[in-house]
Amino acid sequence: MGQSSVINRRNRFFEQMDVESFAVLFAGEAPHKTTDQHYPFTVNKHFFYLTGLVKQSFILVLIKGLNKQFVYLFIEESSEYATKWLGKRMTKAEASAICGISEANIMYLEAFPGFLTNQVLGNSRKSIIGAPKRLYIDLYRHKPLVRSYGFLQMDSFIQAYPELSIHSANEILDQLRMFKDETEIFEMSQAITYAKSGLEAIMKKLKPGLGEQELDSLFEYQIKRLGSTAFIFNPIIASGAIATTLHFEDNKQVMNDGSLVLCDLGALSNEYASDITRTYPVNGTFTPRQKELYELVLSVNKASIAFVKPGITMAQLNAYAKNLLAEGALALGLIKEITEIDKYYYHNVSHYLGLDVHDVGTYHEPLKPGIVLTIEPGIYVDEEQIGIRIEDDVLVTEQGYQNLSIDIIKEITDIEAYIKS
Ligand SMILES: [Mn+2]
Image (cartoon, rainbow, N blue to C red; front, side, top):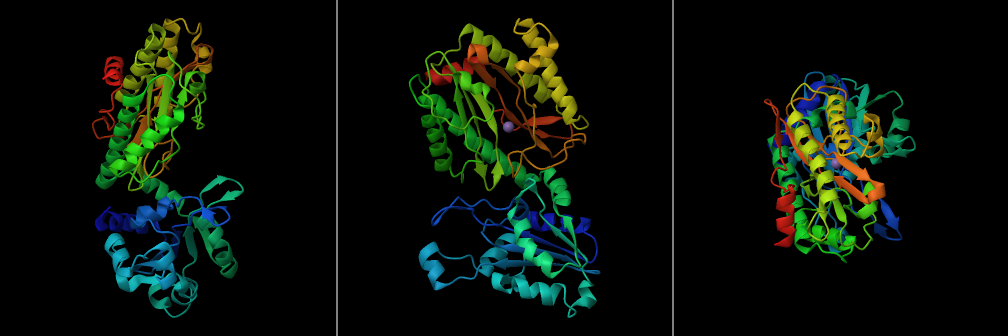
């Protein structure tokens, strides 16, 4: 990630904070699964964005004083027990080298509560910090009653300091994270390269009689072999009629001769995501009917990518793609009225992409350079057992767009030749 990137991001966050305020961001912990087992750890993406660190339980504190700003990091202390059972802990020097916070400002987690009382909200440093009245935390809510880790951690703290006004750090960070810097574009391109290689591994083995789960295992094997840390989401491998279910994750069917298989998947590179969909003929050859529907989706995929430029809105992009799909479906005789397209296409054509697969950001503002978004038109014809989606990852540039996943083949002739090779 590089120290300079995260230092620069923290400075941009500071610019947006009020004077006499502070922010606390938690890295989080892996959720408990059963008995002594936990789900894999996923770092809080705001915490990562500002530190470059992927470490459980770490806490970042940013204080904007009267005329100076301060950054502190709280890390796990190493113990003989922890080293023997769980491995070596990151040292202050190691953490400092990644996040660019000086070792003097890195403390152990047990010092955190006292630090707040004495160093932030107490009287001892009032002359430089002032009296912080505002606290920024990650207030992301997936559902009203499902609260994020940072949110939960703050409860006891809020009880102790009811005089503080709590503000969402997300408003600032969501906005900053919308616009990708060079290191981020690099990581996302890497994540796309992993997905490309995973899809090639799938095409090489694809044949009737194979299970969908075999394709998802091949993909996982290939991306991890190349150095990807993990999936960003569970791959959707859906053949035949099940491909009309958008977020099908079961991947348990046997793939039949003559059917299509829709593969919607992504890889992670240093926490950055790719999100790609390709649709392949299981036996290596599209039927004439599959071909005409595929060509329609492909033409809308290409036209929608070419439509991307600064100034257009997501609403315009959605309307543009949907209209093209409707006109194409009308020409093919699939529908008789433009409005009937809702039966065969029922999602948006795009979402932002970055540290999260459905990345943060505001969706009502016109596109600006630095945004990365997906373009993913589809057609789902349940009665013909055909589901097709073609998804690419696209960067908005000053001039227009750059298709970051242009190297992942999607032409019918290229796909058929690759599967047969
Ligand atoms: Mn997507």
